[in-house]
Structures are given as structure tokens and as C-alpha cells.
Amino acid sequence: TELDLSPDETMRVLDEARRLKSDRSRGVQLNSLAGKAVALYFEKPSVRTRVSFTLAARELGAEVVELGSHNTKVGHGEDLEDFAMVLNGYVHALVARVFGQSTLDTLAKRATMPVINALSDERHPCQALADVMTILERFGRIDDRVITFVGEGNNVATSLALLAASLGAEVRVASPVGYALPAWALAQTEGLAGKVVPCVDPRQAAEGAHVLVTDTWVSMGREGDAAALRAAFVDYRLDEALIARARPEAIVMHCLPAVRGEEITEAVMYGPRSAIWQEAENRLHVQKALMEYL
Ligand code: CP
Ligand code: NVA
Image 1 (cartoon, rainbow, N blue to C red):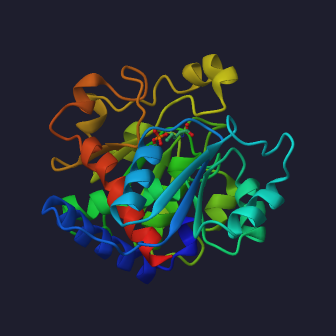
Image 2 (cartoon, rainbow, N blue to C red):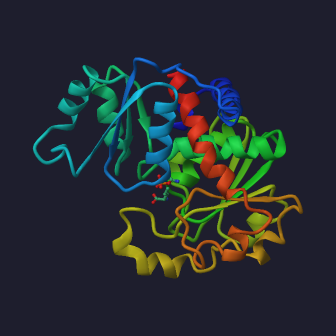
């Protein structure tokens, strides 16, 4: 999880990510993961996470093996714990995108190598690292910044809220009743330098914000509830009226993939406030730094 790194460790990873980004832009060849191998395991689809982890590992000299439900028998013929124990003998890290966080806990229980959360239903810590990197690039600091998330209090909101609050930010999470950050996530804010404020009204939450963030209304695995989700989130959209309530220098972020016209308008997504493409690119740099660190 994002809180497995202390604030100091997070900042070290982000400093390294910034260095790696600069090295890449100057064409510097690196081999800090030479001789290592990384397994990527996907229970759900992905563009950014797949491409960025694959390139992150390869550009640092590591081998990558991709696994998923389509080419393994994990969960339907091979036990998850056995899967982890076998991979221990082959690879130096396991990157896993899964449904339940408990799957990661099971993998981590048996793994002698680091297990990296590439998204679960509950958390998306690598996305949060990229988001914080983007905020630091745009503002130079994250403590004292107000970050407003508009949408469901699930994986992306939870990890961003906890990571940013651990670094001193105020994070407001505006969600319809029934879709708020879970109580366990709020309990984990105890003792953090910043704070997480759940609320219902997105307009109130956007007042004076430095950063506005949203995420899809229909997360992976929730397609069966799409109609109900679309009805519940109809007023939770990043549009120009909402942005007008934020600070004049406010930026907009979205982890992607986005459904234009639902959680974000086309004008905002491609407008001058958008840091979305920088945010997506930063996945590559933070994950390189994270794998080096681990
Ligand atoms: N933001 C993100 O994780 O994108 P993918 O689902 O495409 O990996
Ligand atoms: N909340 C979204 C994030 C996608 C990167 C989902 O879980 O599908």
C-alpha cells in the first residue's frame, strides 16, 4: 500500500523519479536493474500500468514476463500461494493488478520478493506516486496544498488521499452518499501530517483547491452496476463551472482511462489546466524509482 513507504521513503523515491525522468529525456542509458527479472500479473485490463511497468523495467536493464488470467491457471487450477512460491525462484519482483487487496496479501505472504500493487479494488498506490510527483512538479510542494477528489472513494481516491495526507496535504474527497471513502481508509489517516476530509458537495470541496482530481464513474469490475453508478455520479463531473471555484492556478488530474462527458468534460481534459498527460507519463518514472528502491 501507499503507506508501506514512510514520508521520507516516498520523498526519496520521488527525488529519484525526477532524476530518472531527466536522465531519460537526455538519453542516458541506465542499468540499475540489470540481471533482474520482473513478473507482471494482470487480473484486469491495463494500458498505462502495463506499458509503464514494462518499459520501466526494461529501460533499467531488467527482463519482464507478463502473466494473466489468459495464460495462467491461477485461481482455476493453480493456487495463488503456489504461484507466488514458484515465482520466488524465477523473478526479483512481482507486479500485480488484482480485484481484491486480499489477493495481494496472499501473494505477499508467500513471496520472498517485493510484491507491487498495480491496482486493486481498494488501492492504486503507483498512481498516487505519479499524482504526487505531478503535484510536486507543478507546485514545488505538496504540504499546505488542497487536493480535491471528485468521485467514488475507491482505489484511486483512497491511495491519493492517504499518500498526499502522509506528506501534509489537505485532501477533500467529494462523493455521493453511499460512495464515500471507506471507514478503514479514514482510520488510516490517524497520525498523518495532513488530513482527509470526506464530503458530499463537489462545489464546496472545489473552493480554493490547488488540484482537482477525478476518476471514472464505472471502475473495472463494476460494469454490472453501470446504470446505477451513472445516475449516482451525474453531479460529480469536472467541468469549467467546478474549476472556476478552485484557485486560478489550479491543475486538473485524471488517472485515465477517462469517459469524456461523464466524469470530466472534453474542454477540461484538453484545456490549459490539464496535467493529465504529464501525470500519465510520470507513472513510468515513479515505477522505475520504486523498483530500484525495492
Ligand atoms: N491509470 C491506470 O492505471 O491506467 P491503466 O488501467 O490503463 O493501467
Ligand atoms: N477506479 C478505476 C481506476 C482505473 C485506473 C478502476 O478501478 O477501474
